[in-house]
Length: 239
Image (cartoon, rainbow, N blue to C red; front, side, top):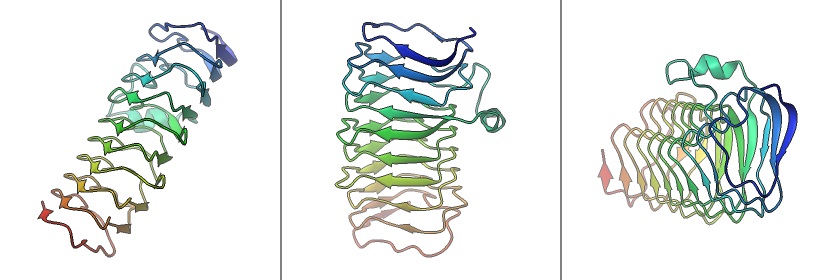
């Protein structure tokens, strides 16, 4: 495909096939106001190396972003993603409040750099591998999120992470942020458990303040952490 520039997906579109825009040179994809599409399918963004912006309708019917929706290419893998992602500049995307679920690995192996959630987000889980091995550099986790799954940000470019006020986050999964570029984090006090190796291999992480209500810290959760760490009084399990 030789499409380039900006493309608007009309509101009456209810189905998108596999790699609908092939290896086109599109840089902006806009979903029309009141868009009737329910889900962004797997491989939607595959091949779109010039993509810089995806604008989802704030008042549409979209409720799901499927597994591997924005995987950069058919050939990208966990063994070559660093090189593949270094050759592209990356894209930003907004997640409207209508989106309540991600498929596992929705943005893994993708060149997404920035994600902005609607302040009234209804997303309750960031599933396993959601942004693993991606170019994502920063994200603000909505207050609606209760669980961040295993390997959710593993191996990503994530350097800064913030949580909306009044966060409901309880659980951080295994290897959730391991081997990422994270350099600072302020976890919300709602967090009760941090699973095995959640922050292992985060060699840039020099300080972290643990939540006062934390009860459980898994095996090697903070291996490679430098500096000072205070274990809150409510912790009853250390791996």
